[in-house]
Image 1 (tube, rainbow, N blue to C red):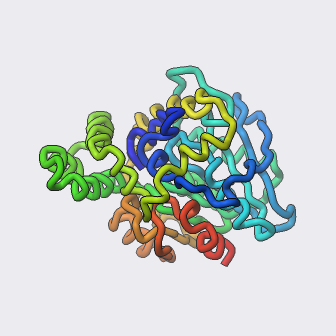
Image 2: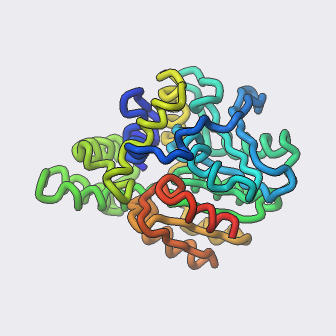
Length: 330
């Protein structure tokens, strides 16, 4: 995940700068070329959220929390919907202000606490007693916060390539960027290493400087997030087939920028993982550069199980949907 992606500055041509722009394949599999599952707008806490609810009504419920912040759940629905067909009831939400949900006015304040309250309101509206919660990337942080706030509602917490602790994840990503920049742009490589240093303040300036470092990678930035070069422009292809106007892709920037600016978002979370007493499964691609070693250790200390999927980067659900489905329903 990059700051550009996190702020949700989604452009029509490259759809999502940063992680999202880095991930959507040049050749979509047949399952991803189909139209997305039908969804609907639900009135939730003063706005309307786009909610997709598919699968057998009596099956175990899996609730997907997307990352970014600001990229929406569409790519997960496209790839994992077919892979999970008949195995579970899959519920996903475009978060407050994002993609197919109602746009928010510029300057609107959005916090993780807002997202947690929204998810609980969605659960109540759909009359779901308990569900398994899956958070991807930044969504891993939000999913953990939801589980800690509503432990009685979460059967299992699943984290896919998560940013559990934002500072730890972003610094680890900067270290990976430094390796790609080394020998090509030495000054930028040194800047990336400075950002990776724990002594560098994690503030608004950090986010901006990290974005500049990743931008210096050009097209090679995509290699931070996918396992193979052929899997680079997934979001561009997704945008081309989704039939959504450019403004829809761009509107997530309002919530994304607000979320990253909030002190509660940047709160250290490594020690908080152990506060969750239910089962934890962490799924990561063997080529992921976002979830840091410190976060993996914290999950292990909390008794969580970690599965590493070969031939996958940051978006396991895109590059290896069948393997992901097997882990989710196993």
